[in-house]
Length: 281
Image 1 (tube, rainbow, N blue to C red):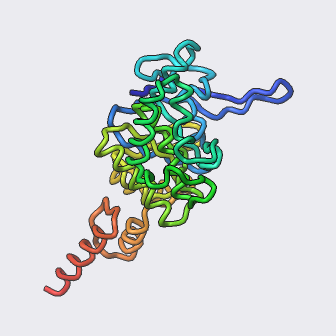
Image 2 (image 1 turned 180 degrees about the horizontal axis):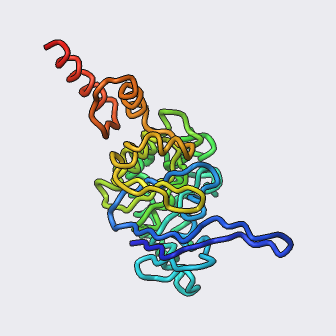
């Protein structure tokens, strides 16, 4: 669905040396996949995400979205219909005083007929579990609810791919759960391609694939089990791992034999229980 070919990007100021953000990025996002994009602040992940819907254009190399080159200006409209971008702060995407009007904003700008807009708005709000709030004022909603409305606004444009730039960063645990449940449902049950930028390793562990960036480059790329098994390497670039993975790594350092690739609390409990049964025997 999305292919970055030798992509580089730099911010240029005539009075200062250019700031290089992306360096020879090669990355393919498969249709229907759920990809988590990780990296410490300033590594280039948000900049890369903005290349996926032509919000930014590469300084060097090529980004293809469904074989459309993002540098071709006449393709920008179709590219942005294909890839929807959800920003970190939902307040930056909410433009109306009524939820349903806000969700309708995108399709209206695409020139969708009014009757179809009505259906799209209702369907999008139902998908994110916010239909009962369609006549509410966005500013009265919780952070998690606002973010779900922002996602609905993108869904109403019917993109094939959803790119989310730290959508849970400003939310409490319940809000994070609401948004992540919505993202997983869109991917698993609706077949939508999802690229999730996050600092929460437990969220990344739910993806099909984890891509780690460091200093503007792709540093690691693999399944969650493959990537998070490299605990010490991730620490070296200022990244954490899921808490169950961290616990098991420390226990291994203390001489307790435990299997690799543990990501969830349930897997951790099962491994510890098996270990205790072995010792009891």
